[in-house]
Length: 316
Image 1 (tube, rainbow, N blue to C red):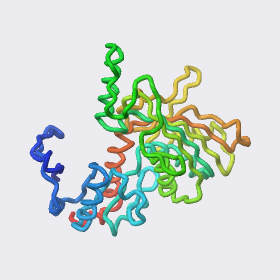
Image 2 (image 1 turned 60 degrees about the vertical axis):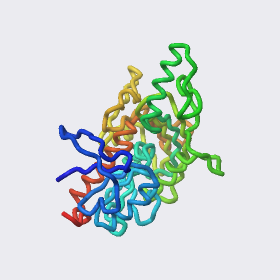
Image 3 (image 1 turned 180 degrees about the vertical axis):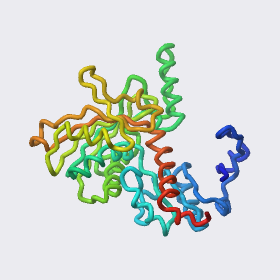
Image 4 (image 1 turned 120 degrees about the horizontal axis):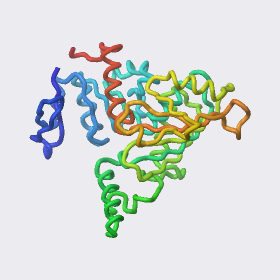
């Protein structure tokens, strides 16, 4: 099989290396997908909305990393550890949506518990790294650190504010409800992925001065009692999850430890003392936003298709 790199005319002709092979970026056109089995889209919602359906009509399976199709009824929204059984729903559109990074990280950890004791309510607060806003945001965070050390004016081109030594509400637009769009993505996407329209989800999303890997504080209200020991046992066996819960040495998930790793780290597992005994569980997680939060999840979807649903790949 061959790998084809597609981009706008501005980027066409650039050279990139993959697996020791130099590849030339080609211009994206409406005929680009005629000989393509699977296309990974990661160029923003407008390009996905324009070219995704074109690729699908050409018989190419699209795995889209933007928010363009996440809530479309004919496009499955997939976290493979949770709902790979939704993949066949792409038969019509030929588009599978990759969820929001914070949603993926949360759902990968919460789902194993939800299967044992259904969650009535999820309360999540996120601590989101610069990587979620792209390479330029990561570069600016590093530049702000240099500016501060050198006593220079703090560069503020990306977020329009000081990022280093600061926290601020997620930079997505605020809706009429007072929630920002990142928070509402977590709410709506979780309901769809879990096939649980009645589950109560609320989120608060915050940017923190960390280069890579998001953290989340998660509070679960359960329908049946669960001890913290039972929760630990469930999560220790969960796919895509690594248990980091060392109370004696006060070692729990941290973004530095999660960066560059495929698994989501989970710890601080304890009973919620504010709820009736056994009905509330608290978790703290850290996950690499670039890997499991985006690229890895998309690749896992493709692997699931090849392994379990090859009939979707109509050109093979």
